[in-house]
Image 1: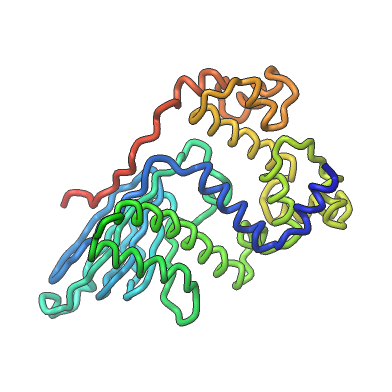
Image 2: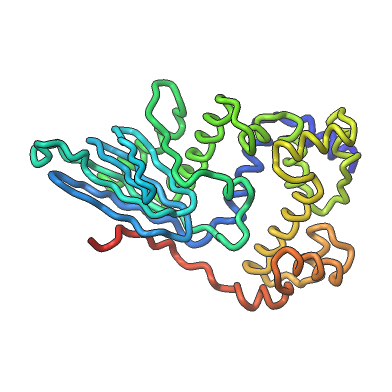
Length: 315
């Protein structure tokens, strides 16, 4: 295992970032993504109720205003992308010019992803209610390419468009989160953006994600990163927000919860796959984190994933 760990820690730190982010999204996505195009002209107002997932809006043409319950307003221009990671209540409306009836039409791409909100990953849990990614020349080219392709598929659907849209929506979520993490890292913000930009912490996270069943110790992680146990633990806790082994336990039991929901794998096999030597130890740890036994969790959650539904509120 030592050689495998060293291989993990010596990987490209960019690849490690992507692996952790992919795990986060895969583990907490539920249902199927939804998207449609909204074309509005004149005076208009579209309210969106709160939603158990993440919503997004992209301005394909024209401009508009985003309103939130706290009274804040954001002007959105062509190419701007808005992500509401927690499905917070909000509204979109025209800019309210005196000659609004003569304003040019606004085209929007609106959609949503259903997330399992019962045990959200810390990266997702710490995202702000509204992420506004403005168009800036040379920034986030992959995101803007995905936006362009989505707009094309919606304007001119052809054979294969259903599969293309599903794939593009998956890519869009990754690109939106990547763009936000990159912007946060560039401005020196603390938290998960800094953790994934830090080669040592990013590699440690990737190692735990890639092999959660390994009996990781703080000493081992610190040694492979050429840091003392104490220095590594402080650095990890500062950036991630919790100690290394606390995060590892949380991640193991999150994987276990997904396996309980999505597979018929025995409890004993699940316990081994996430690093527990006995079903009894696994059950005790699972109940501490999830508040219920693995068997009851499976019975309660099996088959509870439904297609995403998110539409403007009436009115």
